[in-house]
Image 1 (cartoon, helix red, strand yellow):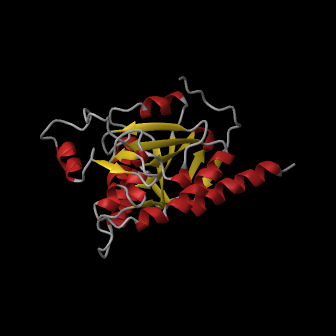
Image 2 (image 1 turned 45 degrees about the vertical axis):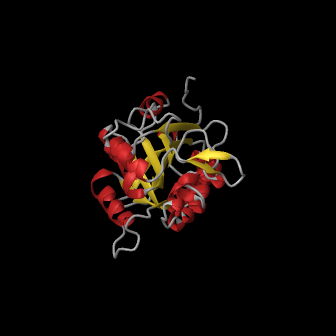
Image 3 (image 1 turned 30 degrees about the vertical axis):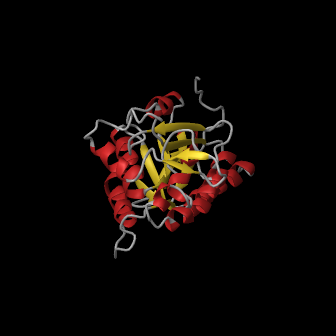
Length: 251
C-alpha cells in the first residue's frame, strides 16, 4: 500500500512545551501511539498477570483519546506501534538474547483466556492481548505497525512510512515511558525527527513508588537532550486556536 501525503493546507501551530515552545507544521506531523494495548493496560493482560500496577497506564487513556480526536479533526496522521511477536516466536531473538530471555520471564507466548472467553496468547500478534485498548481503537486511515523490540524503528517500516508521507514532527504518546517510548524517541531523534512527548498520555509502572519515578526521570532526559515535553491540554489548545484563526481570518 502506498501512503500519500494529505492535501490539507499548510498549518503551523506553536505548542507550549519544555524546554521551550516549538512551532509545528501540522501537515508534517503525526501522532504516535506506542503499545497502548491490552497486554499492558487492561486487567488480564501481561502486565496485570505479572503483578504490575497498571493504573498509570489506564490514567493515560483518557488524555490520549482527546489527543487522537483533536488530531483527526485537524487531519493529522495517526500511527500505532504495537508490541507483538510471531506465533512461533521466531522474532523474539536468539536463545540467549536478552530480548528473548527477559520476555519469556514474563510469559510471552503463554496461552491464556481472553475476557471474552476465547483462547489468546501473551504478546502474540493478532490476538486480544496485542489489540489496542478499546478506548483508543485505530480508525480507517490510521497506520498500525507491529514491532518486536522496544524501539518502533527497529526492523519495521516506520521510518519508510514517515518519509513517504513527509513527516518531520512526532507527537508521542504511549507506554512505557522509560522503555518503549524512550527507545523510540531516541531512535527518532537520531533520524532527525522532532519529537514532542505528551506527559499525561504516558505511563510507567517501573519505579512508580520512588521519590522520582522512572516516568519523571525519563521525561527530564528527553526534554534536556532528545526533544520536547508537553501535555494533552497544550496540544489541543494549540490546534483549537489554529482552527479558530482559520475560521476567522483577519481582513
